[in-house]
Image (cartoon, rainbow, N blue to C red):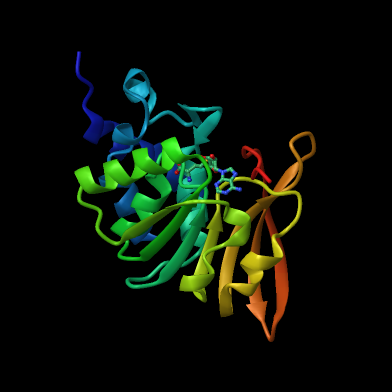
Length: 210
Ligand code: SAH
């Protein structure tokens, strides 16, 4: 039986996002429209709209829908906003930002995932996304500074190079902590070359590999 994916997406927005206080209409609209099931392995498509992360192979995961929506809303995205994402993974988070009109630069360490994401962006016609196969700790200096940075794997501490590549007044959302300790999702704002840090939520992300 083929599932009615559109209904599943609408339900996901109603019961997983609105009930947890995701308020931005633009973000809710993106979550309703980007076809999350196309970003997961075929055998997991029926689970794509569940309230949980899912495996995308190579030990990596696509984040829970709520976490994607929450992180996106925290960045207050606007059309043409220049955003750096670390950890392309399935490409779903980048697609959400692209749907919102952002200029997305995304870095993935594993070549197979970087290629897979590139292919899906082409197939689904997401044009404003550039994918680089490389180490996210280094950022993307040729394209810096960025209005915002979103990190979707957890380092043990905030990478210095990423702070450097953030614009004055820019925001970074990043989970910080070890594999065996509690990770905290942090919102960082760069002001007068210093950072203001706010702890948002306890989370569990795969590690940002050194
Ligand atoms: N944003 C993704 C979820 C990513 S999971 C999505 O929407 O599907 C975290 C990803 O970070 C994995 O794909 C992993 O391979 C990648 N990663 C881990 N360490 C990295 C590093 N140092 N640089 C870039 N990517 C890294």
